[in-house]
Image (cartoon, rainbow, N blue to C red; front, side, top):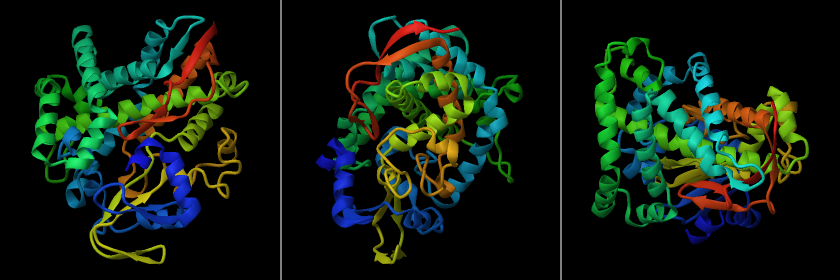
Amino acid sequence: MAAWLAQPYWFAQQCRARYGDMFTVRVEERPWVMLADPAAIREVFTAPADLMHAGDANSILRPMLGPSSVLLLDGAEHMHQRKLMLPAFHGERLARHREIMVEATDRALAGWPAGEPISLRPHAQAITLEVIVRAVFGVHEAVGHDRLRALLSHVLDRLTRVRRMVLIAAAGPNHPRIVALFRRELHAVDAELHRLIAERRAAPDLAERDDVLSMLLLARDETGRGLSDAELRDELMTLLVAGHETTANSLAWAFERLARTPGALERVAADPAYAEAAVRETLRLRPVIALVARRLTRDAEIAGRVLPEGAVLTPCILLVHRRPDLYPDPDAFRPERFLERAPGTYTWIPFGGGVRRCLGATFAQMELQVVLRRIAERVALEPVGDPEPVRRRAITLVPARGGEVRVVGTRG
């Protein structure tokens, strides 16, 4: 656990060099079977839903997200909730939020000092949090918007520290002390989310609104069943944690890499196709999540080996994204490789795969491209210091100095 938490890239690469594309490690109570072969990863992503449970494997997130999070459900309940949520992330609906992303970026840029080193990650967090509050929660008025942003920012900062994840892993997500700790930490946020849900349910213009919360309130299955307040609370927390922290970290990594690639930021500003390729290459080379997890519900054969019930299969994003047979010169940042070909279903997996692929993948990629291009259009940046090593923040991987750059000029 110590090696995996401290140096995940080094640990995974050392294990693969010694044991090959499939090996077992003991990071927690249950054995993890790490996979780096796309053929084995395909077996995992296409396996029957009753054979591999992602909800059980993701149990470390339960104290923060709640038991009804789509990330923690399995079987029929997972598919029911996923189907209700999916329309809110349809491409046409997402396009309506593009202007929110541009406005949030412009607001953040106004506070960037010229000529001084700045860490991009906090600024990226401010952008992605504003997008969540406005596009997902549908809060636009100044007072409510600022109050919710401040509350969510404070709680996220406290809950996404490595120490909290270690505590959950050591004691277990259902330990009374862990449950009590997170209940205290989340009390104010829970109260605000339930207030917001109740207020929105009663809104006379609910059917005309295009924010994600309003669409989730209107969603019904074929029997007329929708999402309860408790389910909505857990899904809002899921969208907040998954959509805010990960996207902000990816933005910081994108600028950390692009600023060290001559001419890349200028090309991002001028060429939408290159901007899309730069996002894909950032997510390949610097994924913010290290692996995907599935727990076996019974003995099963994977990649020619019989694995026992209870084992956690972990397709390792870090390893498959660094395979030289898939990505020549794999440690190099080369967005051009995604101008030449589209990402593979089982070889480019920053959002997981199969029926558990991240619901917000399209939203996240659009936001990354919009924000990346807007910043590249508005300011000229240069890197500060040496390339940044990877540092862990809870379950995410971030630049050690937060993506440090210097504004050296303006454009447009």
